[in-house]
Image 1 (cartoon, one colour):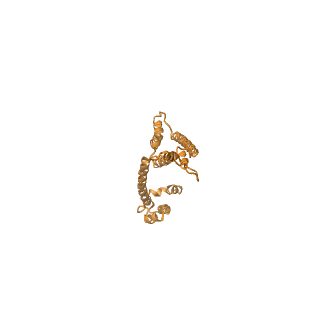
Image 2 (cartoon, one colour; image 1 turned 180 degrees about the vertical axis):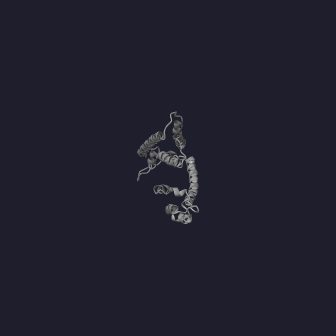
Image 3 (spheres, helix red, strand yellow; image 1 turned 45 degrees about the vertical axis):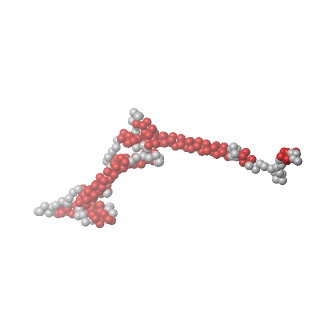
Length: 236
């Protein structure tokens, strides 16, 4: 709205009050100047009102001058802007990365928060941005975090982002490689299990369970006992 009013050369009516003609000096030129001023101020006031939502228009349409209207809007939205600044600062301080998400996506989220801080007039220098990003790395990156902390050469945000991207790509490649090796091991173990099926120590016992005389055959009787009983002489 301020830019729009500037293009129309109406911004002075946001800070100036209407001129007053002193008694005895009401000539035609002064009256014309006052009328022109009032007309331009009327346009400025209604341009601002026209830019409001219907709900806000109903609240501010009763304000008499463009200056009063603009001051009322500034008080309202500057107060809200202070609250927004505090919210953005709290969001930045509380932000922590987690291992369950991609580090690069979280770095991008953090860069958006930093950009919001800068947009609110709370500029963070590049060294602070780099240090804060390193400090907010997830627990699974503790070794890489310590490595970055012990580097003496200062890095820019762009250099840090490149290092983090390379590190995450390497971790993803290692993870995929370990998953492939693990699947191969499981396949080999499954193949060996299927080959060795039925070759255990109980296989012979299972086969021997049904050992016995074939159908139609009987075991021989004890002939030795029968012969002994025949050879004993009878007593008279």
